[in-house]
Length: 408
Image 1 (cartoon, helix red, strand yellow):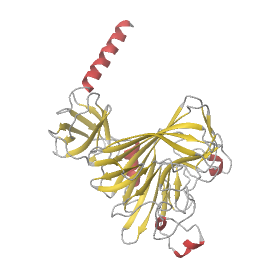
Image 2: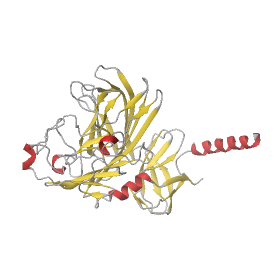
Image 3: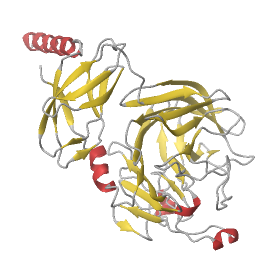
Image 4: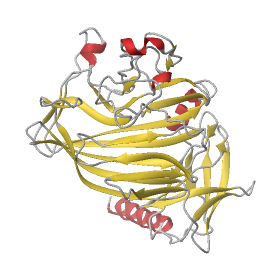
């Protein structure tokens, strides 16, 4: 028993020493999954000092260099393609001098907001002022400079859509936490107070990390929440970010009560892409949006479990654009149900089961004091429809990414 323990400790020390080796010149082998992966971020452990230089990962066979971000104990890079069930060898290259990062996150001079730029083009802005009832991403640009989400109430849309003032572009919220309403924004609603924000730029991805306290209308804390956005250096026709949200019951036990009014990841699509209108003023606007989940397009997508959803349609003068949202297999009650509405709303909500199943199920969930619960999602802002953007295939990349290991 003692000999086995000593061997285990020795192997752990050797493993740690190996991962802490200098990065420049190190080789890794990437194993493809069951399907071809295109533009899929790959992560590998690399404990040690972060080099003060630009890092690339080079395909030994093809001599193509791919962007990488080294942060904490992980190197993340984005190859163009990894073939299914095939192995590819790569070499890490640390450049002599740093270059401007491909994904830039910087503080907005006008207030509590962080602007995200990808390959020199604006992608989105994270607004976290405590003058708002919750943080949100807006505007969110698709290829061609058109916004993919609704601009109101922060800005104006060509076609008016002024219902549900709390539907602010892309956000995270829930409607019943120990009775506190952190979904709507009326007089009785709660708040998400931003406590800390950190951010950084990079080549494979830039990141925003925020710590928030969700409060009731009386401003008493209900639950602690920490989120991280990773914005990747993808092409304009497939802009992508990951969201991780961790709730911690830091102020006592919390009940996520069964309500349809919630979305740990939620968005409101721009008016032209809605599948129908929501008020009399909108009747004059022809809606061209298509709602799709894993079972297909059309009706019957509201309140249905699905590993992914897509909302896409034609924008005049721009072309077909869409937003694909992915649920991670590690999430609670995977695949999640979606509060997926034909007037433009979509939210990942695994708690509102009684509403989605005609009261056959109850979605109440209790998080005991001191415990944490994490949700992970991916969003792709794409050109083309759900098939042209290969949304189902890109979901496979997310759920089963290629795996990397050091060759030495």
